[in-house]
Length: 335
Image 1 (cartoon, rainbow, N blue to C red):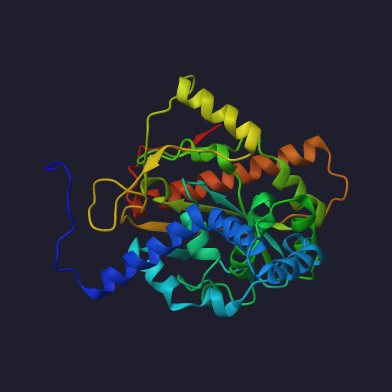
Image 2: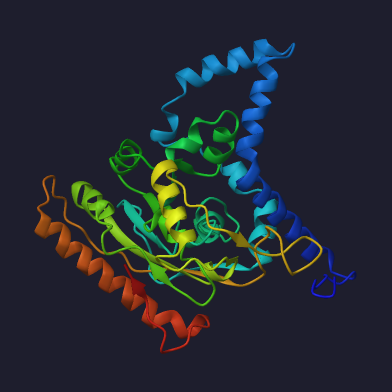
């Protein structure tokens, strides 16, 4: 037990509330979906089966809502618990330029991290004051469609502005007149396998779907870097070519989810557990890249805009890295 670093007994109430906020989110993220399925099954085989039937009928008619803008709740986004959640790390949202609500935007979020904590804290809640920093802009974070097939859980995640990541969902949002911000963790689940403290490896060079989407709708592109995102958890070593990495990548291709073997801290000790470490996260939103609408973009059009996006992302990284604890010699690693 000597290797376990326990938390001190005398801790300010505010810090305890912050830990509680992050604990409930972590449990929700990792276990709520499974519990929701179990709850529905229990309802089906209980005297409350009629409620399960009614919900099932309603679910049938509501099936496509996650691809039609979801069902966001400003009340849920403004819960006090999200303030405590953001202050735990803390998470800070940094604006480098305003976003004109007359236009729509695709925000490319980098890096994915283990649990996309920065993206959730900044764009799915008001814990960091998104609406105050970007008035007139409505953010939506894309999430794998499978999560929206889970009863009860889907209602919870939609309330925080999470929507399906299928093509129909993004097209629906970007077809609106203006003020929509679609947030995409560009590296996706595979990038989570490289989320390790002190490293910033991005899956970007072959990711062009969001570029084509921007061209098709004439949607401005905005690079976003979340400094500190990869510092929140440790992972079991899984270098490219190792047995573990090969297994993880194979499993990801089958189920669509990356399964990094990660660990953080616990509620009462700092040595191991599922809670993220208390380390600052600075999510920097760059300047928008204007995009001219092109319904039939060529490969050259996509390649050209992708190169411009990569350059803007690198420039954003270089101009802010030393401000947020990244050594000057550190470079982005792109795959």
